[in-house]
Length: 106
Image (cartoon, rainbow, N blue to C red; front, top):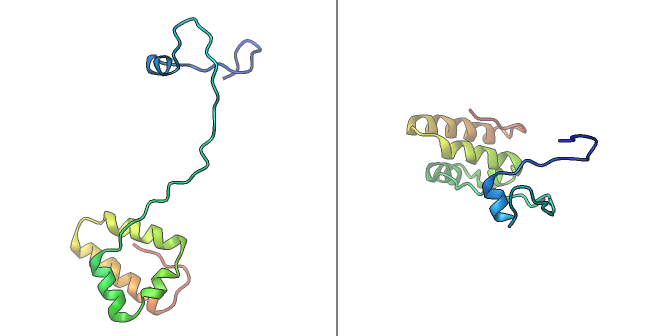
């Protein structure tokens, strides 16, 4: 945040001072870098979904969904009840069978 016609001021806590090997009142030199690496998290395919995909021969249909596949699997992995999981898997299978372009669950 700019202060007194100076470019910026960085507020630093005790842990940051210790890590930067500096103390109160001293001038610290540092570099700020942006981390451009994305951490892609893989979500496992629920066993029930895998079985249904094989039964309906829709495995390649799910694999062809690049970005939305990750969101779908993420959602399915956070579902707590089996009833809700089955309901959403049925909905997903129906959408894959109908070759819908914008597959959405719930």
